[in-house]
Amino acid sequence: SSSIPLTLFQGPSPHSQAISFQGCAAQMCVFMVLGISECCLLTAMAYDRYAAICQHLHYSILMSWWVSMAMVSISWIMGIITSTTHSSLIFTLPLPSHPIIPYVFCDILPVLRLASAGQHRSEISVMTAIAVFITVTFFLIVTSLLIVTSYIHILGATLAMVSTQSHLKIFSTCSSHLFVVFLFFETASITYIHPQASSASSTQSSYPCSTPSSIAS
Image (tube, one colour):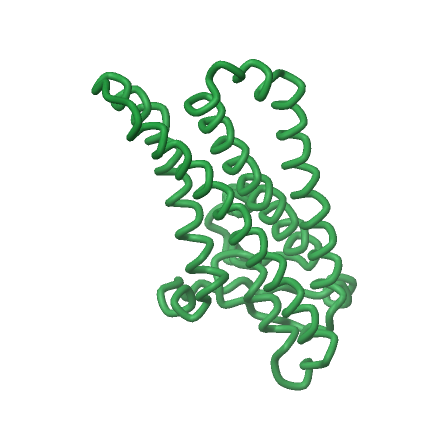
């Protein structure tokens, strides 16, 4: 969704694959805000399912309006802080004069590969790549473990019920969330934890990303 507005704005022009340095940074920042926030929101929704099924007598307390607002606010704050920090680190790295990103948009790994390639490779570039990888992996692992823990408790509560109607009600409550969780984390794990698999299957579209000096000229 972060790349669609640019594509619609440029249309079928001959430079439709070009993006400015500032545009690339903004695209990555928006992408990371949405990704991290969704990761946290999916975890909060898993807790909501747990409270509704396993602690239904205390649901109004566990998931009060203030608790819900706090979860949503924390999710967006985490996304904004993480994306701002990582985008600032990544785009202060030395890049080629006219870098070509072999990807459909300015994602984290393709830009890091540019900064760590050839003569632009430096200790700072390597450390930044490691820090970004650790942070993304940490978010994916911790949030997925929290979601799995919630559904383990939900499964235990479901097995303790004897009513088929209760089972169907729980399934209808959790099925849509489980589908979105599987889709999100499967895609994220293939892209960031197993980047070779993502690179092999990704499209070959490229975005020439001009640096500020190129824009000025």
